[in-house]
Length: 166
Image: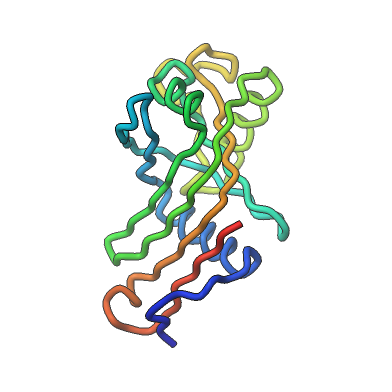
């Protein structure tokens, strides 16, 4: 069944499909806005967790980068994943920094123990010798809108577009 105009779906229907696609693709284009309202984009590697009731994400990233100032002023970020078969998914999120020792240790461990291809050893990143390195921080993500668009739908075939909004 092809939905030409996607109907709103439940989080329970959308989140697992989003996580599967996002973790299969791994890297997402992330967009923030600076203090003059100009968009900034970069590629990031979120790790998503779906517990059957809520979806959250984390990003291991430097709190010394321009995104820190941008997110402090405008705490929202958009992530879009794209695969060569044209599968795409997007998460619009509220973002908050966790620079506590406990949060950084937990985030480091989450990435280090996640299965490949989304899991990795954070120590491979230059400047991240330990979870307490000054250039290592954790960005928490709380999605308020998700969209999952299989490439088959975009190309006129079968499939279903899922959209959830809080």
